Length: 370
Length: 258
Image (cartoon, rainbow over all chains, first blue to last red; front, top):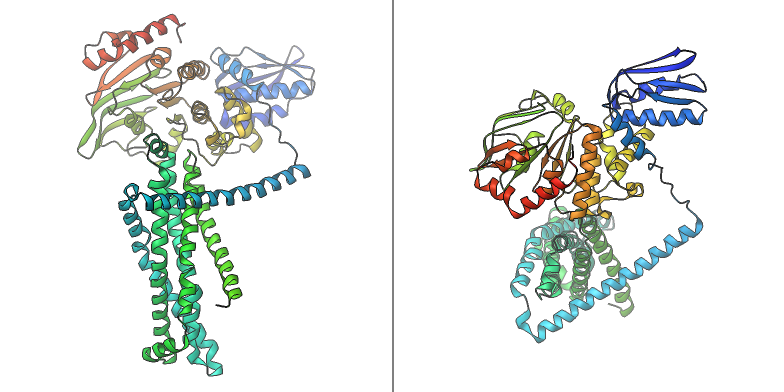
């Protein structure tokens, strides 16, 4: 491409030859900026070999810019091959006005805050609604056991419970090891190594065993629930179920949440045992507390109530994880993006809810003196 | 000749989709590719644009052999064509304008304002309202997504546009509007179009030539009038069936596209 700026008959004439398109855009724009001020000028396009829509856009926007500066630029002898393109670009340029964003005001900020708060309240109400659906379907299943999807329940118990055993056991074992190690280091200066048994047992049985299990299950299972239900929602399978008079809550939600409620306490127990095992092994290796001594100390020093305090939380955690996961699945829209967004939001919400509820339980148990 | 295919073979396991397929596409023409379900129309399109490696045979685009070509040459060639996928295939995390800007980002030395203006021009050219430019694909209807996909395919002013079922899933009014839009754009931008479709109305509204895929190869190519004379059960059923006749009548009644 070359742009010649010359004069014919006292009038500046600009001649463009070669190809004017996207690759030449910036170069051409710089050349246009060099056009000296004159009231009238002609742009001769007869030698133009190729013009693309970016080139046409440049010609027309430069023409408009020069007009604003007082130069009337006439496009002359547009080659026939470029004519339709110039016309199309001209027609669409008129509509291409840049959109303006409304300014951010205090009212808009307040409005946004209000919507967030109202959204939070609606979210809690929604969760409560799903709890209600689950309870209603559970009672319905007790009254009419024939309509209950037992196969589905067994399948989900395997998915949610059995398959989570290795990861939960390993996690709890390592927590036991860490507690024993840390406890030993802290207690040894006082000669109180033996209390490491109580330290491990009480913290794992009361809190860590079930809390960490619930967190792992929240990450593993809430996302799986959301993904499974959400992809069915996306492909209109849920709508199809409703038209076939299959209740989605009965077929999808009840077995999933019930499977969690059944298996999470068992997983918690696995975590307790495995944590104690890890702690015992580490105490043996690090402090020389023999497994027999660990056992005696455990039975004498630790009340069984700690196990109950730990495990009684499990069904509640299971409920909240299941409800959050299923609700997020039902909220998926018809795009793959919303599926991804709801899945990650389900995990975050479920973990957060588990920790909040654990804190509430701690306050409750402290009040009743357990 | 912008596309030249010789002896293309495509296999999926033991299943052969194409065997000894030959096809030519000339510069500046609109070539319609039709065929029953499972005759590999989309596979053919994907093979040409390099999304699928042919199991045998040769594909040349703009006179350059596509098999065994190095990556830089490929990328340079790919800038000269645009592909519009069935549902637009827009990037869901980007707004419509950002989607159209994606191919423009590869152009060296283009400042952001120009890029934005060019993207908005392309959005206006495919007939979308400009306030749609800042919305996300999920907020748009199917027809608008298709138009946006076309705007992205046209972002670099390609010489060839590949359209995969451009009117599938549109209502008849939307489909007719899309046909009109394509006709205007083909004329204004001087495009060559490789059009995979089932839609007889689109064929009659747009195509210069038609290639029929059947029996794992291109069974016949020619103008629509020539297709009417082809003696093959599928071709006859397709062009002489009730829908074929209706499309022909309305295609003749409307002013000739090109």
